[in-house]
Image (cartoon, rainbow, N blue to C red; front, side, top):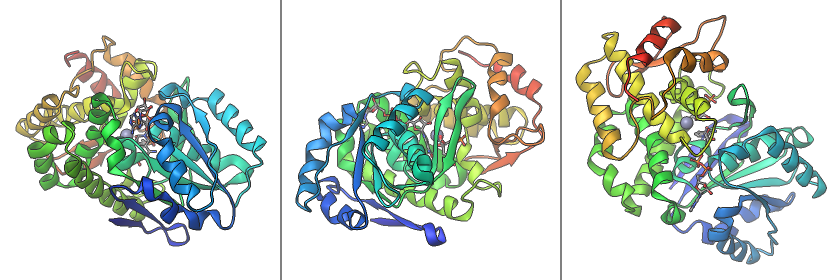
Length: 364
Ligand SMILES: NC(=O)c1ccc[n+]([C@@H]2O[C@H](COP(=O)([O-])OP(=O)(O)OC[C@H]3O[C@@H](n4cnc5c(N)ncnc54)[C@H](O)[C@@H]3O)[C@@H](O)[C@H]2O)c1
Ligand SMILES: O=C(O)C(=O)C[C@@H](O)[C@H](O)[C@H](O)COP(=O)(O)O
Ligand SMILES: [Zn+2]
C-alpha cells in the first residue's frame, strides 16, 4: 500500500509493504540519480537487517557503508548530533544526497534533524524499523533531539522524500518495544476513530504476540490517519496536528522524570499519558468514567502503564517539566483532552495547579 502525504511541493509517499526492505533497490534507486544515498543506522538494527538492505541496493549498483549509531533514547542528544554532523561532513554529504535513516524513532528524529541543518537542508529518507517509527515518527517531518531542559526541544520540521516501511522487519523487535509502539497505534483510535480503538481491543494482544498481518493493518491504518492530519496542519498551527500530542504533555513529563532512559520508553510514557488524559477529562466531567476505564483496561491488558508509570515524583515536579512544552503560548499550556473515545480536543482552560493536584492523586 502507498499512502501519499499531500504537502504540495514537499509531497511524498509512504510505502507499507511486506518485503519492501529486500526490494529497496526498486524503491530507492530513483533517489540515487541526482546524488548519493548515505545511510545512517542504529547499530543493533543494522546487525539484524543491514545485509538485506546491502544486497538489495547492490543490485542497483549502490554501495552502502553505513554510519552506525548506538541504540537508545540517549542518542537523541547534542553530543550525538554534533558527532553525526561531523561524520556526514567528512563524507562530503551534499544537498542533493539523501540521508537514509535506518532504525526506530530515535534514529529517524536525530538523522532527520541532521539532514535539516547540514548544508541548510539535505534530502532525507526514512526506513523505519520499529512499530512506533512505522506508525508515527517516520511520517510528518518532526525531527529533534532532547536537551537537559526537556524532550524534542531542539529540532526542525523537515519532511522526508520517501518512507519505506516493511512490516516484516518488526518480527525481530523485542516485545517491550512492540508494545511501546502499539501505544501510538491506540492513540489514533482515541483521537478520532472509535471503530479503530474497538479493533485494537479485539486484536491488540494477537498483534503483540507477533501476528504480522495484524501489524501490517495497524501500520497502514495509522499511517493513513497521520498523513491526513499532517497534510491538513503540517506545522501544528490549527489545533489539528496538536491532537497527535494526546498523552504527550503528561508523557514527556514522565520521560523527563525518568531521565530519557530505558527506564521508561516513549511509547510507555504516551500510554500512561493517554490514560491520565482520559482520567483527568473524566474528573472534569468532560468524558465518562466508563470511557476512561475502558482505555486504562485495554492499555493494562497489553502490559502498558496507565498511572504515573512507577515514578514516585509528586505532581508539582511533573508539572515543572511541562514548562517547555512546545504547545505553550503566551503563558498558556493547551492540553489535549477528550469528550470520549475518538473525541480528542484542545483545551486551553486547564490550570497547572489542577494538573499537579490531579497527578498527586494518581497511583504510581
Ligand atoms: N518525530 C515524530 O513524529 C515522533 C513520533 C513518535 C515518537 N518519536 C520519537 O521516537 C523515539 C522512540 O522511537 P522507537 O520507539 O522506535 O525507539 P528506538 O528508536 O529507540 O528503538 C527501540 C529499540 O528497538 C531496537 N530496534 C529497532 N528496530 C528493530 C528491529 N527491527 N528489530 C530489533 N530491534 C530493533 C533499537 O535498537 C532500540 O533498542 C522517541 O525519541 C520519540 O520521541 C518521534
Ligand atoms: O507528529 C506529531 O505531531 C506528534 O505529536 C507525534 C508524537 O507521537 C511524537 O512523539 C512527537 O515527536 C511529539 O512532538 P512534540 O512536538 O511534542 O515534541
Ligand atoms: Zn509520540
